[in-house]
Length: 193
Image (cartoon, rainbow, N blue to C red; front, side, top):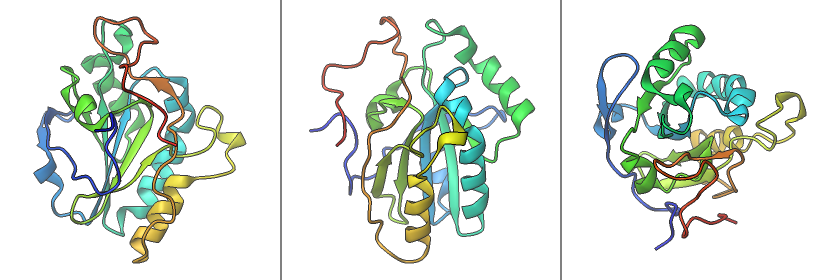
């Protein structure tokens, strides 16, 4: 089995605390036709560089039944600014249009096979994976973005078409695993394409 979920795989369930004081599971989002789950954090320059593009994409598709759910699985012992208090402060400041969940035990990151921040997973109405990988081709510098794969996939999906792209390699910092050197990745983690 591959480290990262593959197209057609069902979304693994979770039960995680959010910055809004509530806990959420997969079932919390059943009213939405499509679900974008993405692994992110507070400090990564690739996240910070593309957050506004991600915001615009989330807002664009909200009326088409698409819900964005962000998950931070980074070890706070690797980057203290990735802890829960900093997550709460960041959401209060930025007011992003998504739920921001904390995966402190990193179990959800392992279940999904999250490789980098950001790493996007798009699920259809049956919660089967239809796309995984990058959001855009240059997340660190929004002024240099030429391709928005996430927008393209969501446009096709919400127009009743099968996405023409199923996977790309996520571009960003690796997930910061507890007790490991900051650039460490699991041995079976590999490029998706």
